[in-house]
Length: 99
Image 1: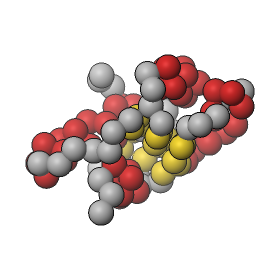
Image 2 (image 1 turned 180 degrees about the vertical axis):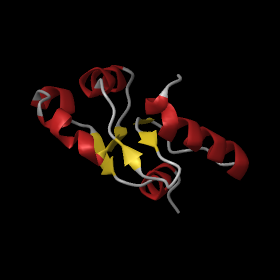
Image 3 (image 1 turned 90 degrees about the vertical axis):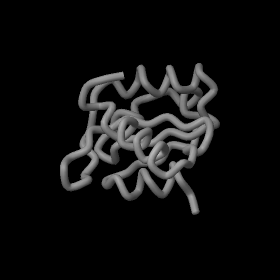
């Protein structure tokens, strides 16, 4: 994946390599990351959530500013998913690599 919406994912992959630690399984994420660690909203949330669900993902990390996009999804699409809304990369880190 490439482009700004892969920022969270790319940083998490690099940290996984640097830490020698895998992120939690069944995790999907999207979000643009600023140089100061803020997570910015992205497009295509409906398609990304549906694709994650079809792939068997149980936990999803999304930018908090995309909450309105998820609210528009049918309940059966969201059912059984643990959707986490984040504003900073530190929050992503805490979910992907719990202590």
